[in-house]
Amino acid sequence: MDDETFISEALRIVEAAERRGVTLRILGALAIRLHSGEHSKLHISLERLGTDRSFTDIDLIAYGKERHKVRALMEDDLGFQISPQILLMHGKERLIYWHPEGLYRVDVFFDKLRFSHDIDFGDNPKNGRLAMDYPTIPLAELLLEKLQIHDITEKDIKDVIVLLRAHRLSEEDEEEALNMEYISRVLADDWGFWYDAVQNLRKVGESLERYLEKGIISEEDARDVSSKVEKLLHHIDAKPKTSRWMKRMREGSDKKWWRDVEEFSR
Image (tube, rainbow, N blue to C red; front, side):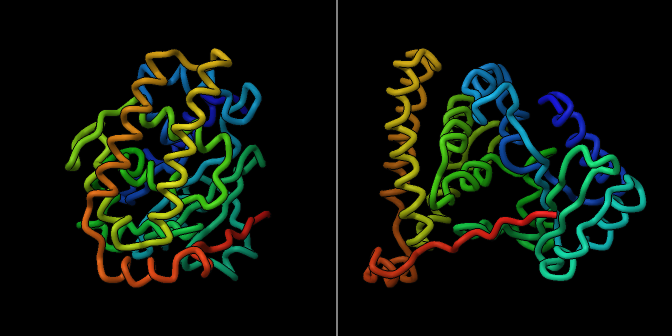
């Protein structure tokens, strides 16, 4: 499937959820493309997967309290086929679906993302973080989703570049702005997450010169993203750390600070 079909399919599912009164939001690279606006051409030109394709599946998140509504939507209304193995082993935190014709996979997470590090959206549809944006998760969590990756890849670095290029930095939740205060607060309570996030931001900064030399990004793009990386790093560094963060810092990198991520198949 081409990029536009992936985007339209993701929106079709989320819009169907909205009509059913179910909170369902788009994650990952698809969400970044939807938010990139005039910079969507940059996302395309970076060729995040090394081909003319940008996406391979659709990732969504909902509240666990609405799990039964999500299943009714996906299975009864839209005809997706559930993975019975994932339902049995991980159904409380994650479901995997396949398009009725096998065209693509849909991963649905509940309440939080549990990868190298956790990103918590809350569990209450009335006041959780998912209400902050539509049809995607909030921009702050979109950035955290990429920064939490312990072994960050080229495609994820490219996603971060586009996300930073397309948005201004703010110290509160605002429309089309990255809330660096919220990001800093999350990292100030989790040393392991902080450690990987800071390293990943530095890798983003280091990649800019290489992409500039290859002509993939412009000087204006590189300057803009570089300044935002530095500003974000400064804000993260200046944020007072919790006692939990300080306690874990004393152990440092001698003790494993990330979770290994399991790959799921059909």
